[in-house]
Image (cartoon, rainbow, N blue to C red; front, side, top):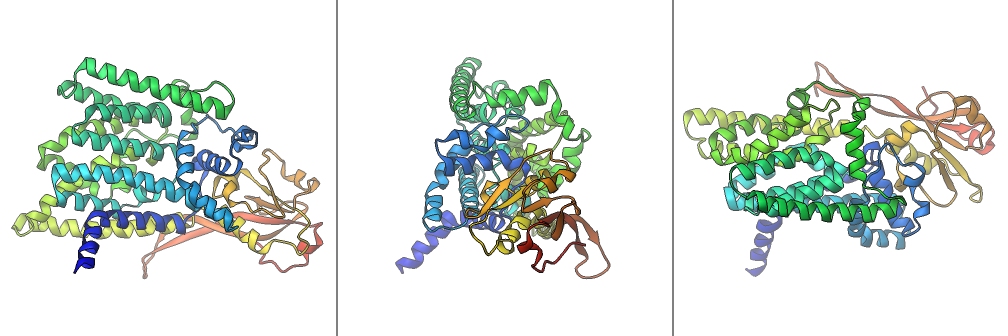
Amino acid sequence: MAPPRRSSSFTSIYGYDVLLGSIAAFYVFMVPFTKVEESFNVQAMHDILYHGHHIINYDHLEFPGVVPRTFIGALLVSILASPMVLAINLLHLPKIYSLLAVRLALGFFILATLRFLRAQIRDKFGLQVEAFFVILVAIQFHMLFYCTRPLPNILALGLVNLSYGYWLKGSFHATLRCLIFATVVFRCDMLLLLCPLGLELLLTKSISLWEAIKCCAGAVLFSIGLTILVDSIMWQKLLWPEFSVFWFNSVLNRSSEWGTQPFYWYFTSALPRSLLVAYPLFTFGVILDRRILFYVLPVLSFVILYSKLPHKELRFIISSVPIFNLSAAVAASRIYNNRKKSFWNLLYIALLSLLVISLGYTAITFMASYENYPSGYALKTLHRVGHTKNTTSELWVHIDTFSAMNGISRFCENDNQWRYSKEEGIPLEEFRQRNFTYLLNEHSSIKGFKCLFQVDGFSRIRLKVDFPPISMVKEPKVYIHGNLQNTDIMHRIWPGCL
C-alpha cells in the first residue's frame, strides 16, 4: 500500500506543476523558434554557452540592437541550462536542441516562481482558489507560451511573481526588493507597478516611510551596482542598460516609432486575449471578496499608467495577469460553491461555457503561432536538403533582416560546411556579385539566383460555413534562392516557388 500513498503524495504536491510544465514544454517542442523581440537574450545565451569568456566573438558586438540589454538574465538561464547543453554537445546533437534546453530552463524558473505564488494563494484563499487559478493559467495561451521565451518582460515576470507571493505572505520588504531588482535590471517600466504598490503599502501603513526608504535604497544600490558591473564587462564599456532603455522609451519617446495604439487598447484587446474567461471574472472577484481589492488596485493602476504610453504590446503588461487570475479564481470558486442555487447555477453554466470557449481560442491561437516562424522552418528544411556531396566546400547562406526577425537565431545554425551571414543593407542587384550559395529572403525574385522553394506563414484567420468553421490563411513569407553558378544545386529537382 506504500507505493500508492507515495504516488498520491507526489500528485498532491507536484500535480499542478506537472500540468503547467507539460503544457509549457509542449509549446517549446512544437514552436521551438524565436522572434526578433527575443533575439538579444537568445543570442546572448548562445554566446555564453558556446563562446564562454571569448566576448570578442559575441553577436551583440556586431549587432547591438536599438538599445542595450542586460546579460544578467541570460547568464542565469545559461547556468541552469548548461548541464543539458553539455550533454547535447557530448552527443553531437544539433544546436537547435540547446535552444530547447535554454527555453526549458527559463520555463522552469518562471513556473517555479509561479509555484511560490500559488503556495501563498493556497495559504491565504484556500485549496479551491488555487485549483481554479491553475485551471485559468492552463487554458490561457499567452502565459505558458511566453514563459519559456527569453524576453526582458518574462525575466522580469519571474521576479514579479516572487514579489506577488511575498505580498500575499505579508513580507512587504521582500516585495519591494523583488520589484526594485526587476525594475533596475530587467524592465524599467516595472516602475509603473512599483510606485502604486509602494504607495498603497504606505497609505495602509503596511510599511513605514523610513523602513521603505532604507529597504528601497539598499535594493537600488545593489541592483545598479550588479548590472553596471556585469554589463560593463559584457558590453565592454561603462553601461547601465535599463537606464538607456528608460531614456530611449520615456525621455526621447522613441518607442512610438514601432507603432501606436489608443489609450484603451490594453482593456479592449490585450487583456481580453490574455485573460480570456478570467477577464469578466476578475471584476466579479473584487466584488465578492473585499480582500482582493488590496491586490488588484495597484496592478490595475499599473495597466492604466502604461496605457498612457503610445506604443503598446501585450507582453508589456503580462506581469498583471497573475493578480487578475487570482481575482478571477476567487470568483470562480464562489460560483462553484454556490452552483446549486438558482441564480448561481446560471452563472455556473456560463462559467463552464466560457472555459470551453477559452480553451478553443487557445487552440486557435496556438495554431496561428505555430505558423508564425517561417524562416526557422525554412532554414531547417535547407539544412536537410541543401547540403552538397562535396562536404569540403563551404555553403554560404545569407539571412536577410526579415528572416532574422522571424525564427532564426544562432542556435539554428549547423556546423560542418555551413557558413552564415546576416550582413544588412545589401541591394538586391548586388547579391549576384557575392559568393553566397543560398539566400533566405523575403523577395521572390533575385537576379543571379533561382528560387528553390518557399515557406508559407500565418496571414489571418478566416471564418467559413463548414466544419471546422475556422481556417488558417497562409501566404508565402520566406523564399530560398540558390546561386545559378552552382551547378550542383541547379542540377537538382526543387519544388520551386509560386
